[in-house]
Image 1 (cartoon, helix red, strand yellow):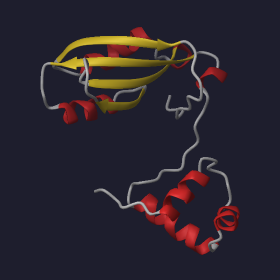
Image 2 (tube, rainbow, N blue to C red):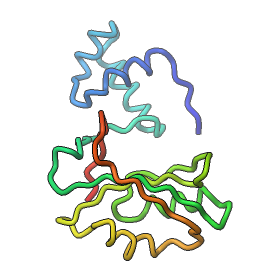
Image 3 (cartoon, rainbow, N blue to C red):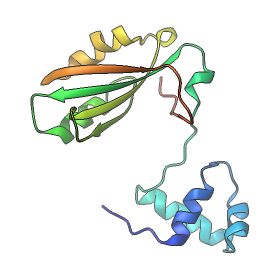
Length: 151
């Protein structure tokens, strides 16, 4: 379901880049009431537009490794396959894309948590059928990359 975004909703979401910012401060900055901010945020959450969560900088946690993976499939049922990938341990996101790959999958791995890249291939990727090719891209350095801590 697509939701129409008005300027107030967009402004509230921009303010929530700092997910800990109080509704009262957002209301004051946008010259609206705190109740309006609360009601709109709750509606955006209920509609699936907004999710407030804690994100980490993976470079600050020893042992974490972020990997992007390009996947070519033997099927055109890309949405189903993206959902299957999204349910694997370590997967942050799975996106249907254009270009040389059918999916781009973002992973967070940690040997300390029992999930190295080799473990992912042996125990997680093995659960998915109809894969014709996989190429991994290990992120050595990033700028402004924030991820959920899902391990």
